[in-house]
Length: 216
Image (cartoon, rainbow, N blue to C red; front, side):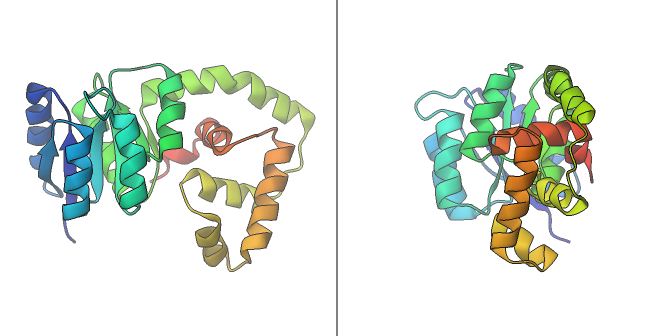
């Protein structure tokens, strides 16, 4: 099985070198390139097609948020893992909208970073436990309302929502479940209506509450 190929985009040289050391010390990972700004990260991703792009959010010039959006446009197969010191889940919303697959804090232990890299490299999603706890706390009220309302979300609708939360497109879900894309769209729309959801971000937040994003 080939190693997980990683690009590290971080403007602080000391932090960048530290990340490289941590990742390269793993038997199943290797840093194939590093960048100190978003534009260079995009150029390297286009050239090397890594499995994961480790993206600092706060970088000069083209910041990590804009770089993530541009990178996903040109290299949709590259999974972006945002690395930041920001604990505000407002950043999480923006990063998810930009197309990132994960969000990990620089303050977290190296083991969390490595777990996050493996998760997104395998096509999953990852939220730093510290941030996930905040999101769960903020949305615990919504969960209570859902439960008390006795919403009749079907098993199939739950299955579709789970796959959406993990980043699969409607077409991919349709193929996986052997259903039409239209049927998937209907299941998704019905589930979102029953659970009071308005966007993909709401689905991801609900997935955090259900523990879906911690699956391996």
